[in-house]
Amino acid sequence: MLTFSLQSGSNGNAIYVEAAGQRLLFDAGITGIMAERRLAVYGRDIRGVDAVIISHDHIDHIRYAGVYQRKYGLPVYVTQATLAATWCDLGKMTDVRHFRSGEALMFGKVTVHTIPTAHDAADGVVFVVECEGRRLGILTDLGHPFAGLQSMLESLDAAYLECNYDPYMLETGPYPFALKARIRGQGGHLSNNESADLLKACGKKLPKWIAAAHLSEENNRVELAIAAQHDAVGDSYPVHLASRYECSLLLNV
Image (cartoon, rainbow, N blue to C red):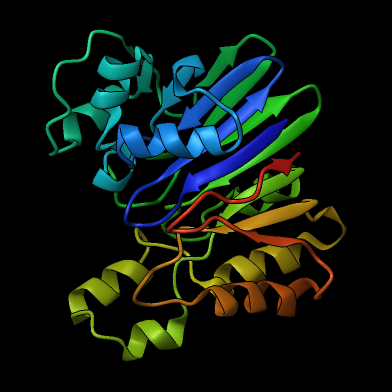
């Protein structure tokens, strides 16, 4: 299984996963042209993608789903509640395939498990992509460390793991109180420290690597997010970055 992040953050999200001949794109938060160019960095053609799978209704994850469908002919998989809740105009889509949160989607030998989250979306999910005994988690916009998240992480070979904010930067930063409360609340995002605590609790069941994902531009820094994970599980542990601004490394699961 191969994967890379095209972009991760409140400015737009899209993650590519390839396994057993299936090419999947998770979320559609960046423009079609940008997605096309970033897939081409690693020699992938957006027109060869087999499915676009949407996690939730927030604009940074769904905004360009209609473009991907119309311009490139990609089927869009989304829950009915998510599609109904999004406030951005997706335009006409003729190939929308609904799934229910908690359902497993099958693409040849690849299974995509959809897991409901506590994030403040209408029907948000995260994903575990499973193929031939390998399991990759796409775990962002989590809300808080909800029941089952720890055991899920322990079952994975690798994961994109939300490290949204540094608590001190959020507390002392420019956001209004209500927004700060939303981010650190039960329906918001995981902090660097919360993600680090999850990793530490894995013990010997740590994934082989994580990619720190969905970092805030205002309330985090790359070095803080990575340092928090290393403080929890050791400096030798592989912590990659799913950047807000460019492709990640091409990673093997």
